[in-house]
Amino acid sequence: MRLVDSARKPLATLKGHAEAVRAVAFTQDGKRLAAAGGLPARKGEVKIWDVASQSVVTTISGHSDCIYAAAFSPDGATLATAGYDRVIKLWDPATGKELRTLRDHIDAIYALAFTPDGKRLVTGAADRSVKLWDLASGQRLFTLSDSTDAINAIAVSPDGQRIAAAGADKTIRIWRGNTLENSLIAHEDAILRLAWSPDGQYLASSSADRTIRIFRPDLTEVRTISKLPDWAFGLEFAPDGKSLAAGFFNGQLEIYDAR
View 1 (tube, rainbow, N blue to C red):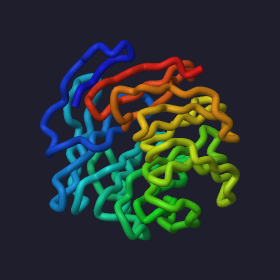
View 2 (tube, helix red, strand yellow):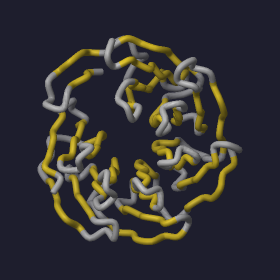
View 3 (tube, helix red, strand yellow):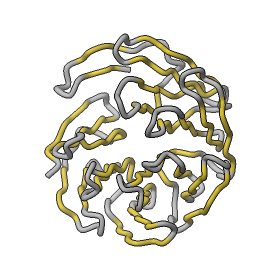
């Protein structure tokens, strides 16, 4: 795994992971980085790195299969992971201690995201469902079952009012609470990632059709970025919302004008 700066200058190569790294997540302050993956049908693994020293803080093993999604809570005190074993686990990233296991999905879990207040977690899976969890109790609050195929991507708006999800059915759906607010067949192939702009005024999506598209919250399209070098499995707005970083399956990183 390579660490680069915003100008795409290589800073370090972080080694020692068990097979492929399938999910990464930074804490909001940028001081910690979680890199997750594992060995198929054997174990999931997460290494948490101190970014400044480029050293491993802790290594976590707990899943029985590969991890495909990881996210830090807004305060950085909790790490959520999920993957092919169909469970979500919450960890103390400082110690590697398991805090809670959440079970209700019946197929591989590919996406998860915390709400901005850190009190809830949204998950999406190959079982075509999106679920919202209360983290204090570990209870599932509700399930959104509008999707017709696997969910690959979840994004919660910065104000916490909207949940966006997309996946193999090529459709972006946006819910306010548990009410479907907008939906759109947005791409010609499976949607891989979603990202809200920091001000919540734009939603970006990347797809296996090798395009990135930017929408307003009502799913009015603003811009299409086409002829991408490969599938974009990483997608994120810059803090000022003016640019958009995309990480590709071939290892390439590109930064695009978001407006």
